[in-house]
Length: 433
Image (cartoon, rainbow, N blue to C red; front, side):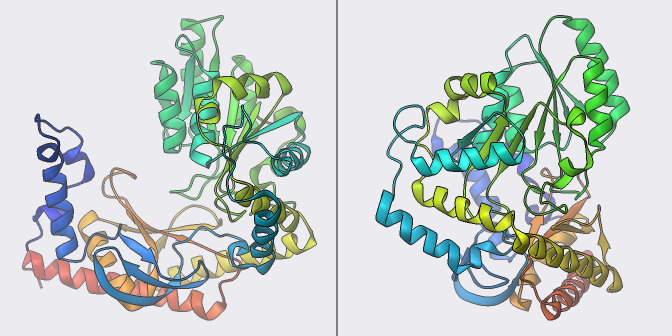
């Protein structure tokens, strides 16, 4: 292997365009590339948990028999609720009362009383008339845009918006405009152009309260006020900070008054509430329209009663005094991890949040770093081009309230050791001292 080997040099984009009449022939080049990466240990996307989610976990690999005990910064469980007995008890109770399956679309007969209770909790907390729950967070993000936006409408969105939002916009209209990340003046310019193009049409602004690759947020108050100047409809994705940040657990929404809130709030349960599922909080007319026009809601089975029971119980914990204490502990851990990384000479991005991006930069170096992490007892996820910009590869550490100080310090030390080992590997491949 050399530093120009496809295993180190190529990216997913090399395999987007495929040709040929035979299905295996079309997929074979990608299979060969991933096989080469696996053979030299730089394919970090086949990890398998061999134990329950927690601040430490036994980690295996789909293509290997060996396992490692790792400090876990790879799982999304910000308040540590997936580790709580109360939530396991909620599942047992739900099985006894409701069984294991929703057995139908929410628009037909897939909803349960548990689901109505959950939707009521969410809409009251967020001060909205209605809430509609989807089986996954991705489905909620795709559904809210594809369900509300029509072909003649325009969508103006942050360039770093999540895949579900991007796909929803592309599905709904050709008039999708991206502004540079958190650049509200560019957003204003695009809104002006699109409003001039279609004075009476729908104009939508799509934002996130916490961007998961860079750990930063927009100035929501200014963004909403600019949108109002152009009669634009604001959709805010709160997947990563809802429940996990802010004094009351409302994340970025705590920084704005009622007049500066978005028109529609979309979120996910998978980061803080220990379950799959997503939601949209909105007005009554919007909820009724989405219920029959958002295809993931219409044509997917409703969220299961087991997941619904978990979120209901988690919701009660998150928005309680105990939840306040968990958020405070989480923020202490976040600050400690960021400080520990910097003290070991590593670069972290963004502002303090449950996501701590540790930059490596070069994709080759990042892949070689990933080779060392698991064997050194650390689980953190590599994010590389095209998920992020070329040359901006990073490891995304996702912090839990249950991480202890010793684990945090050990994780930073291991990350520094593994990056140094990868730098030596890369120099050897390049033939440089």
